[in-house]
Length: 344
Image (cartoon, rainbow, N blue to C red; front, side, top):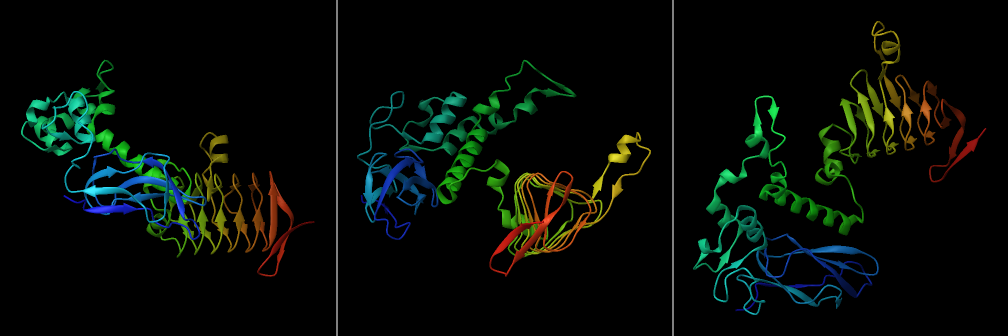
């Protein structure tokens, strides 16, 4: 029986004719679905994942480290387990018995399911094992060991780490991290891994082409213009008063923009009211990382805020702002194509 699909090395980058196989993402003979990442290849210019083009069982044709030419077949997808696959591992039925997928093996170990349940089968998948122990084994650890307002400290709380739900979640996150590394060569937090930055910005009503990291704390409804970049671990406080950020502005990692403070409220033991005032950031403003912009700040268009600045007050367009407390250090000059920061 021929394979369903032969997976070949794609040309990821113009001029790169070779690729090295650096990782198999799934084991040999494992069941895969269309779109499953099966391998990571690297060229002289890029690393990338290759996905399964059909559902079936993966057959690995080369070991990790193999140098391949563009167009070489390095894997196959079969409708059944390939006949020339290695013998079943120790502890499983001898030749002629069923073949177990990796997920099925892990489930059997976690729930102590005997291979005797599957005599006569050709292939055993995770869902076949789940049918044996039922859904009772999927009850959460907390549900089993929580009574009223008391948690049982002697309970087997590590059981959640052995459950299939945890394994599936961890496998999914691992696949997403591999995808992020292969496509963008970066590692991000779990929230940023799960959320698309541009979709998140659209959900909050930001302008076309803007993006915001999931780790940004968004209070209220800040008004953010088009093609803005809101970095990780930032704060946009649009809850206590209006906060507006103009088109093509950037807020660096760790920077915080507020429309309120509780300084007097705290110092007076709660007698003074919370201070609230609208904050306005113009268009084409670059806020460097680790800045704090206080309530009521107004910054004109095409201004620059230096790293680590604590900013209060109003600044005209084309201001070079820096310091703690911040002041106008100079001006921004440019012709629309190039700019310069001029200290005064």
